[in-house]
Amino acid sequence: MICQDLESYIRLRKADGTLVCTTASYFVPQLYHFASVGNFGKARRLCRFVNDRILWGILAGLATSRGELDTAEICFSEVGHFDKVESSKGTEAIVHWWNFQR
Image (cartoon, rainbow, N blue to C red; front, side, top):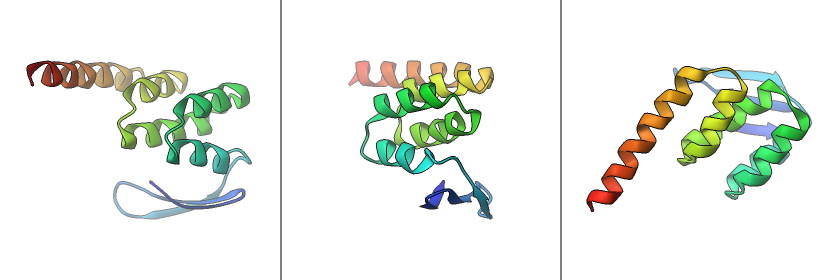
């Protein structure tokens, strides 16, 4: 989870609660803005333009946390995490089935 982003400096909170501080691409604040307002189409276009694995990974995390499974699937495939792509397809099928049953 992104805790704070200041220009090219970013603090991340890992799943175990530890903080990681690092420098990041100039495009991270813009990517974070697009994701925070729910504009994942622009976020994907930015990642395609820059073509940076770190940006794809950040977008994958943001999309997953927002429930944007289509975007998360694209991001995971771009960084080579094909196991997560298959997992998201399974989750998508369950969500579709659940919504159909209602």
